[in-house]
Amino acid sequence: MSENLDQITIQLNGESHRIDGDSGLMALISALKLKPKRIAVELNREVVPKAEYDKIVLKNGDVVEIINFVGGG
Amino acid sequence: MQDTPLKIGDRSFKSRLIVGTGKYKDFAETRRAVEESGAEIVTVAVRRVNITARDKENLLDFIDPERWQILPNTAGCYTAEEAIRTCRLAREAGVGSIVKLEIIGDQKTLFPDVPATIDAAKILVKEGFTVLPYITDDPVACRRLEEIGCAAVMPLAAPIGSGLGIRNPFNIKIIIEQAKVPVIVDAGVGTASDAAIAMELGCDGVLMNTAIAGAKDPIAMARAMRLAIEAGRLAFLAGRIDRKLHASASSPLTGLIG
Image 1 (cartoon, rainbow over the protein chains, first blue to last red):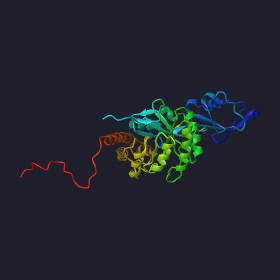
Image 2 (cartoon, each protein chain N blue to C red):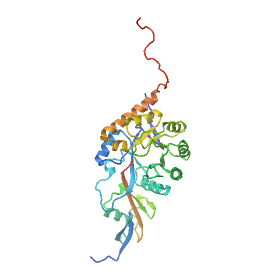
Image 3 (tube, rainbow over the protein chains, first blue to last red):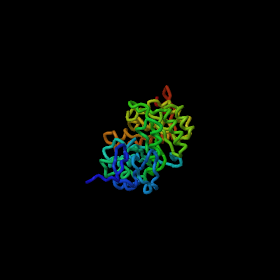
């Protein structure tokens, strides 16, 4: 498969991640098979309100953190 | 004898036992232990989703946020900035805005970094969080946290996971004496009597994780803790006898046969 020149690189949970340019945040969440109600997202150090998930378009160099709840005391 | 509910922020709870969800064998065991404990508030940690190895199940598929008050903690944070960031993310996850503030100052003992905890608490309270800070059994630190608006104070009994029980009951008593917010002993509880002692001292609640999850039979220990919290609270409300140096006979001193 030839390289898609429209791809961009973001930092996702500490790792470089290639996605299609003009990818929406919601598309990324769906591609990762995540349920929005079980996660929270930070984009460039700002928490993204859930209502904005389908409005955000990711750009090259964006730093994304996606968290969920795990066992803890 | 009727008890008043445990009030945290603007919410009321009947159970005075708060349990963690760490160190269990699997989610099913976690769920059974939480249910057996009767706890209404359950702590969880906040961590990155594992992008590469996606688990099909999520903790909250087993611990329903509609049924339990989820209490995200800031475990793993060593600075106020990390803890504040974690709380903001946790709130957006949509389980409410009650948070357990935990900023560690030492990796071996996991004792809290008191100045950082106070700094973070100030900011979190301003941002509208209901803050439950994990703190040392230092009455001055607890007073500061109450003054800046924390919804409770959570002095440790002993290091996290140590099972030593309350090491300084005198400090805990002083903290209880001066506090106008709930005092919840958090960390270091080992077995049922530790929990009962905390409640007998006058604590408003106890938070524990390892004591249950690490027991040989976690479900049985969850039940033991539930009973211990109830017994200790009832004993406290019933008003214990004084401690005396000498005896005070229980049977009459008169009418003895000659």
